[in-house]
Image (cartoon, rainbow, N blue to C red; front, side):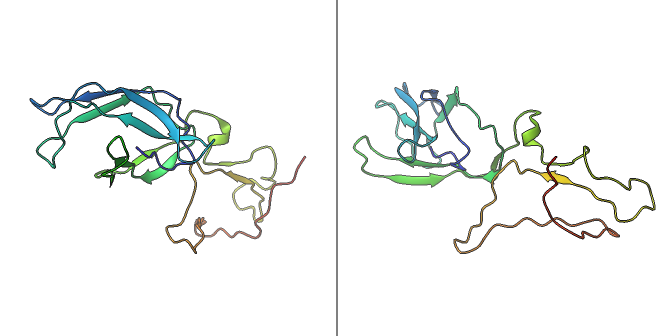
Length: 180
């Protein structure tokens, strides 16, 4: 099972998986559940399962076993809605079948109250030198940290983020906040 986005996942080496049989069918014992990496020495972003030999063959909507995986380490960063993917093959890596999840997209919000995970905040230690109603030309510094990576579907396009100001506001400059 490929956990997307690949860059935010870093699984433990081992996990636990249980096969729950479809109705009166046989499922058996999953003998291997490990976290592996798409690339050598990279983050573990794949769940590798060895399915039971004695399992009733999965066939369309007629036989659909459920595999419950536990002891996974969720990513600290969040990610936008995506689908997981899986590759199913025989032990010798023949008869390969690739499939993506269906239904609702999977997403995750950034974890915890860590200030580095804040999506947006006004920096209160500096700026805001004209804070009263009617004052014009105030300086606000805003820290913006995305809890997920932006990427484009098109290989030649860059991802973009647009920020629209409320009516009556004008942005006169975009620059880093001064260092103390």
